[in-house]
Length: 220
Ligand code: HEC
Ligand code: HEC
Image 1 (cartoon, rainbow, N blue to C red):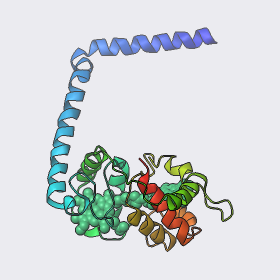
Image 2: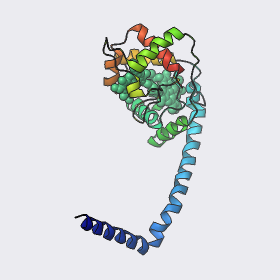
Image 3: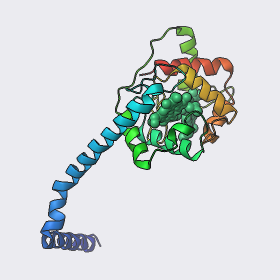
Image 4: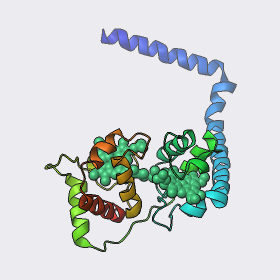
């Protein structure tokens, strides 16, 4: 049986060598041009993103995605896929808020380019100012609250708040913004994809919300 499979595999490999050999222009040229095309597209995307950011987004989120005012979320180091997804949701109206107007005329390519632009900016974090409050936040973040059934934030957002492709990075975000989003999730005023976070935010006390938000802002 194994010998039979090996024979088939060998035959398939031979066949693919044969086809690539038979078409030297098409297939052999591909490895040389594909990265060059990707580079050119990357450079064009970056240029377009730079222009949109400089003329519009930087007003609130800063040129580096640092967002000097705590009511505007920091975008530096955020996952590009998450940024593009939120922009699409703002455009379609799935997520309602201050960004609806900003996202109105962005193309899908713009959204992807803007995600890539902010995603590669270095993230920032706050120093610890109130150790006791941050300590309560650390407990909630890393361990959750088994008395009220709050899952540890770390189990989804990562022990350092780094997030994943599907999940937002939280580390270093403004505490005021985080706390505001937790309130919005609680009341389902954050209108897109709120099922998971609603279940969590609705169980947090005011102290836990404040503490976990402050702790998150200090993560790097
Ligand atoms: C007038 C201020 C303002 C401008 C200009 C602005 N934003 Fe925003 N942005 C906000 C506010 C406020 C929020 C929080 C929205 C909410 O909670 O409803 C936000 C949220 C976002 C989010 C979601 C972040 C998250 O963590 O969920 C993204 C992504 C975003 N903005 C990208 C952009 C891009 C890209 C531009 C430029 C095209 C831009 N913004 C221009 C104010 C602004
Ligand atoms: C079971 C997984 C899970 C757990 C546990 C979890 N989250 Fe989330 N969180 C999510 C998902 C999924 C989203 C993205 C929602 C979306 O796509 O709009 C999110 C989004 C968020 C956002 C919005 C970020 C932004 O940039 O706008 C905040 C803030 C947040 N979570 C805080 C927390 C906190 C604090 C805890 C712990 C008390 C926590 N999360 C626990 C899954 C989780």
